Amino acid sequence: MIASGEYNVVFDVAEQGSHAWRDAVLPVLAVAAMALLWERAARRYGVTDAEHNARVIVGTGAVVFTLFSVYLLNET
Image 1 (tube, rainbow, N blue to C red):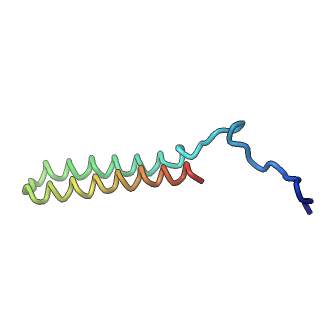
Image 2 (cartoon, helix red, strand yellow):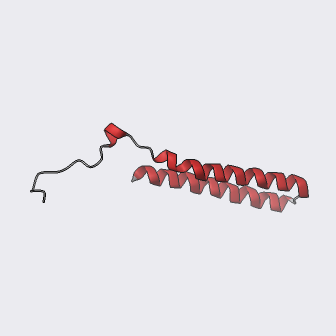
Image 3 (cartoon, one colour):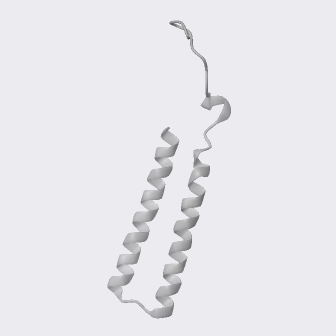
């Protein structure tokens, strides 16, 4: 039991640094692969402007979500 005024250092970010950005590599690669596959399918099958706009919106949302997740990982 720790007495009042005493503490144990469990993790010191100043010494070990933050490596949470590494957790974002896989989601970023997944979003990039999905975007490449979508664009390849769009060129192959031909899409309307509305379908293209929907793809852009979903892709942008995925990127924003991923960046927000990275931000949250760095906060903890």
